[in-house]
Amino acid sequence: MYKLSLPEYNFACKKNKDVDFIFDIIRKKYVKITPEEWVRQHIVHFLITEKKYPASLIGVEVSLTYNKMQKRADIVCYNSQAQPLVLIECKAPSITITQSVFEQIATYNSIFKVPYLVVSNGIAHYACTINYEEKSFLFLKDIPSYEDLKIG
Image 1 (cartoon, rainbow, N blue to C red):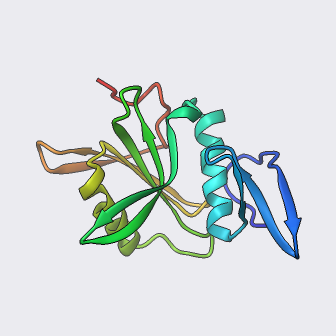
Image 2: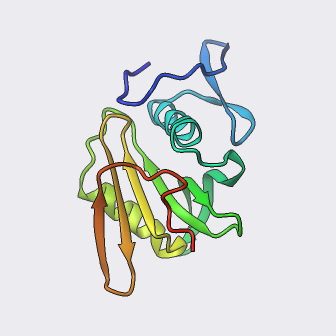
């Protein structure tokens, strides 16, 4: 598949009728490997392995309703009280991270209202924290570890 700027992981993969599948450890099922799914699975493993996020507090393809339309957030990370903390939007490696990608995650965040946003195409990763009182945001040098989140 694509070479990403994330660690390599040993994924469980299989082929069925010439279609490749990867096992999603969060949804506990095989899903079709697309370029975006490849990035999503790397990000999930990166969060759990490198950033120490509890797998039980990660949601993948979380449903939301925006303007009466059903949408899905790629990854949502929660605290132990099931409050969303981090919203992550994954794109295929061939997709350049542009203003429209940030607008998409901002739209989703109007529902979730999380303090941290992450956008990644597997090569470039952008993370920021939002200060709702000051109506400002600050880009971070790296995706925060679970321990670094201000869980309150």
